Image 1 (cartoon, rainbow, N blue to C red):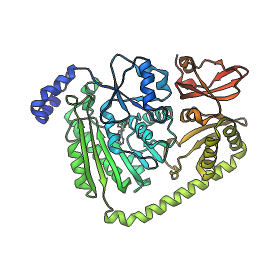
Image 2: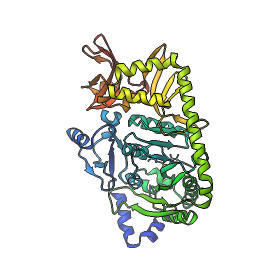
Image 3: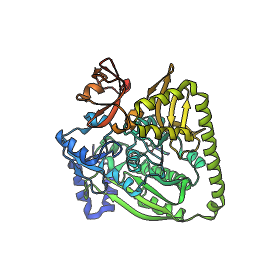
Image 4: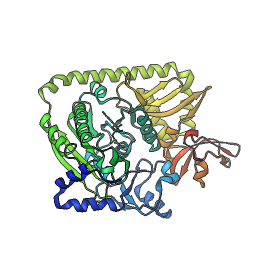
Length: 458
Ligand code: SAM
C-alpha cells in the first residue's frame, strides 16, 4: 500500500530536502528491539543467554535496558520470553520512559497503558518499590495489559480499566510521575504495519490532537507539584506533537517544557516516536486551595482501605489466611516470608471471594474503580488449601523460595507436561535460565505441571 498522498505532502513541507531520505526509509528494513526486564534477569546474563541461541543484541542508544536484534531471529518464540526475561518493543518507543526517568518508591501513573510496553519498562526501573497505577480505557486491551504485567513479574502495580476523567476525580495531585502515551494517528507505524497507512487521514490527525489535549488536561490535575509528566506519541504530525506541547504549557503555565525528542527513521534506528517532558513547577492558586483537602481525602481513603482489608482478611481467616501463612512458611524463603507477613499485617492483603491479592503499600481504596488486577495475585483458597497464583510464581526469584527446579526442557513445561522431580515434595518454582516460569507441585517423584491452561503452548 502506498503512503497516503496528504501525508507525503505534509512531510515534504515539514522536512524539506531531508524528505527524500525519509521516504527512502520505507524501502529499507525496519528496526527490531527487545527490552531486558531487570525484575527477572540481569542484562549481561540475558545477552549471553540470547547469544547462545544465536541472537545477537546491540545497545539502543536512548534506553539502557533496550537492545536491537535482527530481522531473521525470533526472540518472541523462546521460553525465556514467556518467563518475562524481556519484552519485545519497537526501539524508538523506549525513549518515553527514559525521559520519564521513574524511580523506585514513587507513585507513578501510566494513563494509556495497553498493551504494556512502557508500563513494564517503568516497572523494571521501579524495582518493585512504590506504586505503579497502569490504566487502559478499553476493557479487552486492559486484560492484555494485565497479562503482560503478570508475565513480567511486576509486584507493585494495579491495573485499572478507567477513563482519564474518572481517574482525575479520584487522584487529584497524587502522582510523582505520569506518562501519557496517547492514542495517535500512528505515522510511525507505517513501515511496521502497512494497514496503519489505510487508517490515516488529515481529519484523523485533527481528531487525535483534540483527544490528546483532553487526556493531557486530566493528567495535569493528577500530578503533584514538583512532578514530571511525559507526553508521547508514535507519529510525526506537528499538531499531535510540538503543537500540543506548546498548547499544554500555554494552557497550564505551572508546567515547564524541559525536553522534547523526535526520533526519525531516516536519522536513527527506530520507527519514529515523539516525547516531551514537562516539570510541574508550583501550585496555582486553585490547586493551593484544594491541596490540603485532597491530602486529607487521600489519608482517610487509605486508612479506610486498610481497615477494610484487615477486616476482610480477619473474616476470611478460616477460609484462607491460615493456609496462606502455611504456604509462606513452607514455600517461601525466610526473608520473603517475613516480608510477606509484614505486608499482610500492615493491611495490604485484599480478599475477593476465595482470591487473595497483595495491594501495593501506597494504594488508596480501589472501591468504585474498575480494577482489572488489584495488585499482586497471591492465589486462591480451595477446600481449606492454598493454591498459589501463576502471577506469584512470575514475581518470585529463585532465592525467594525454598525449592526450585531448573527445567531442562522448558518447551515441555510450557506445554503443561509433567516431569520427574526426584525426592522433591510440595510447591516448586520452575525456572528456565534462572527465571521463574511457573509452579510445579512435586509428589512421589512426579512434578505436576501448574502452568495455566490458557497460556500453554500446543
Ligand atoms: N503505552 C502503550 C504501550 O507502550 O504499550 C501503548 C498505548 S497506545 C499508543 C494508546 C492507548 O490509549 C491505547 O491502548 C488506547 O486504547 C488508549 N486510548 C484510546 N482512547 C483513549 C482515551 N480517550 N483516553 C485514554 N486512553 C485512550
